[in-house]
Image 1 (cartoon, helix red, strand yellow):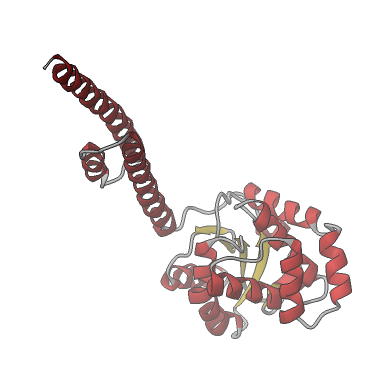
Image 2 (image 1 turned 60 degrees about the vertical axis):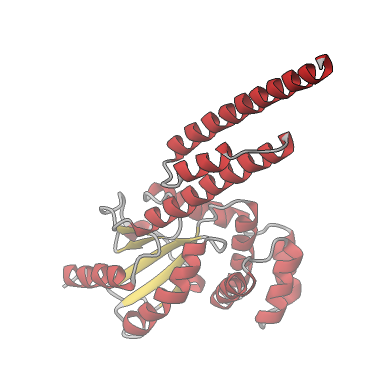
Amino acid sequence: MEEQEKKEKRTDVMTLGWFALGSLFGTMLLFSALMIGTNGAMLQLLKVGAATNSQAELKQTVKSALQEVIDESTQRNGAAANAQPAPAAAAGNIQNVALRPSNTQGKADAPVTIIEYSDFQCPYCLRYHTETFPRILQEYVAAGKVKISYKEYPALGDISFLAAQAAECAADQNAFWGYHTALFDERSRIGRIPQNKADLIKLASTALKIDMSTFSKCLNEDQTTGRVQIDSEEGQRFGVRGTPSFLINGKLVVGAQPYSVFKAAIEDALKNTK
């Protein structure tokens, strides 16, 4: 009987211990949820509060719940940032911005200039490239009303920077737009762009009719690093803080906005040039 009472006491102590540990993790999750501001915070707390049979199970429950909270916040905040309206005009004068001919489409004397600061890894940049860019080309660039110039703004780390370098190596052989399209097509097809120099070179060999020896030397020797850095610093001076961002005759438009937003900004710029 005495042994049974000891066993029951140990069980009670373990139960209280698990309850305390669960409460601690629950409090941590609540704090995280409140800081992040997700709508599913209470649902995650219910998951943590559920009965668990082991320490490993409790840890996994908390870990999964926290990850769901973070994922929900990331998706919502990303969508919110992408949906924000066009901000006020950017500081500075785009007349002082040098447009590289190899990275520019449209007539040199087009009354409206769109300068795009973009990242080949950015999902919103892919959305713009797929949904909006072709319509602007068709309706405005082909008509001689708009010229579009691409600037490198690799905001998502080393791989983005390498892709920007590679695109500029292609630009040195007047193949920027072909490589630009190949990178975004790859991003759309398999969910990511090439992750290293060797794969970036391989992509060029399959997508472009260029001198591969020159392209490989350019990328492997980091010959375009300075150009990419200059583009990024220039964008920051104009108020660019994320991708994609656009200067439409100096007015900053942020995100993969609906085509109607770009159309309105272009039409407004056209009116102001008359």
